Length: 208
Image (cartoon, rainbow, N blue to C red; front, top):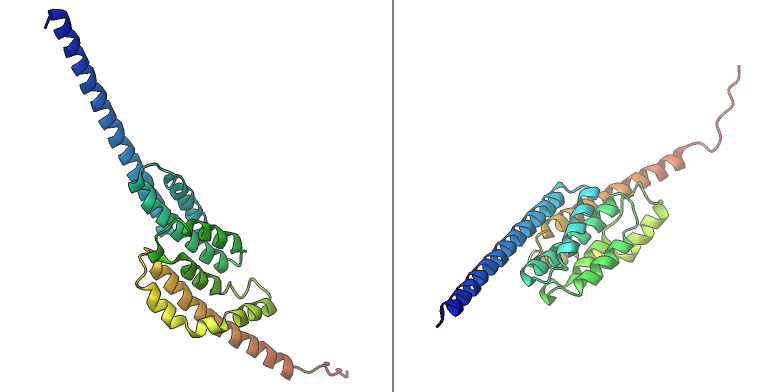
């Protein structure tokens, strides 16, 4: 090999080493950035406030678009769970959660069948909103709609305990809270009805 060819091969080898090193460093930086983004989003979920969940959802939605399956798959699962938590939070705030539930349903079509997202969302749909944020008649209609489902609730909770979701405990807790709220709201309405029944229809006149 002539000195010039030897020199050329050496330069090419050095260039390949430098490029490979740069790509490796770039991939490492990308993994670190992804890990930081996931950790920040997870922290927002743990905070639990409505705005926190919205921020977490935005982060998961971005990460779920990654071409790296190791990033996209867990981000997609977290995205679904965060939509579920957002829907539950909206019910607590007496906000319309139908859009969020449908958004979660669309994400769920991309999840493994072991999650059974439609079954999870049936539980979310049956959760009652805050009783002070909707008219009593609307609350009664919701309760009547889901009465048969609620009778079978324990079976659903037993199933949920086996589903590979990080936030299943939150859903279970929210359901238990809803059950207590439903009992309390019924008792309050009964008390108000009894009060109206016992209240005189007209005030007696006061004679001076």
